[in-house]
Amino acid sequence: MSGEDKSQVDEMQPETVTDAVDSAAAADETVETAAEQASEADVDALQLALAQAQDQTAALMDQELRTRAEMQNIRRRAEQDVEKAHKFALEKFTNELLPVVDSLERAIEASVSDDEAVKVLREGVEMTLNMFVSGLGKFNVEQHNPAGEAFNPELHQAMSMVPNPEVPANHVMAVMQKGYSLNSRLIRPAMVIVSKGAE
Image (cartoon, rainbow, N blue to C red; front, top):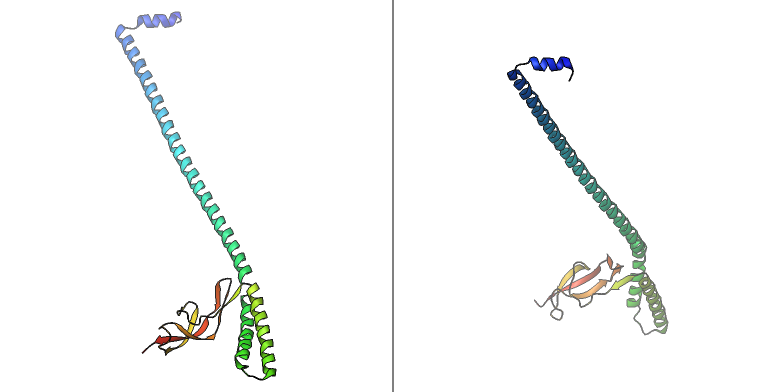
């Protein structure tokens, strides 16, 4: 302390010195309080920023998971579409061939005769039909002949219902046209006559 300052302090009254000390202490407390408040404000701001960052991170992670799930769904659907395209590419072609099979079967049914020429013709048609059905089987085309089976509306198309005490009700009495499926998917229902049972 310079001599001039010392002389000023010496000139001060004790009460004035005490007030000055109190003021200085109060100022220190004010500074400390302000510092504490500033520190608390910084902590609050940091906590708020941290919470916002955590929310944004959670939202981004959720969005990423959704995007991955959607990509997996798209990939799975594409694979299923390709698989279906491979499995059922022959559906239209098969449907075009089925009337040929029907015609061969009708030709066999109509060629009941003891005439040797008709027998030879019938054998030829039977061989052709067997080769045809066997060839379709190699491409997973299955023939369904539901004669005597219970009527199933998912596989059979009823042409009519006829009373018949010899056949249980709701069973197939006769098959007018056989059904077909490709890779276990029905491509043509069997046309059938269904028994009403005894009346």
